[in-house]
Image (cartoon, rainbow, N blue to C red; front, side, top):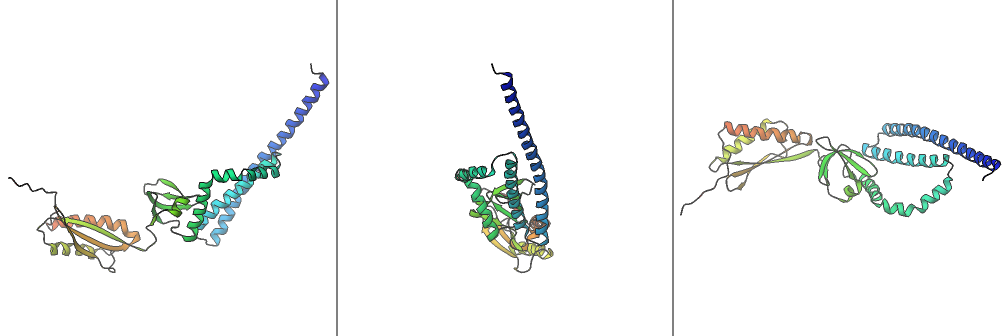
Length: 272
């Protein structure tokens, strides 16, 4: 059996260790709370500096994300030190695990490099409407690992920067003007001169359609059941969808008024 004096000594050591550990845990909690508050304040201060310097919003979102991650890593090291762990040993442990971590995070390192490439060559920026990796939407943020797109139905998509820097990206916002093309089918036997006159009248009446380059109305194909007319116009990029939908509707209504017939699929059978 353990003597009473030895038991008391062990109990005292346990109490001392508990008090010491409790102090370290309490200090670590205080460091964490204060650190989170300081990180929040520093992020706001850094954002204000970027705002005053009028830095491009694309670079701004990237730098804010990078600074936040660096400050968070610094806070983690500080909390570990407050717990009584030797930060030098902790840093050595991280360094020894660096190779394994690098291999595990190789995809993220590629995404980080991809983010730098995007910032350097600027294939797109915040606010642009792009199509990439099978999705399309407005660029909301360019973070250090991902680019965030907001789709037309308000869904949010995170695309790795590595894929965007090495894949095909279609930027619909880079140019100030865009071309719209419609292919309209009419019955065989319709007066093509009348069709062109009616279409050009509709185009001339729409002030959003640019005069230069001039609109094009031309015979495109003699299809199985229709004569296909191609209509091409140039508009400001901001007017693209409104003009696209409204002119299509106006053509349908005006053709009905002018008795220009739209074709239906037809099949001619010959009796033997």
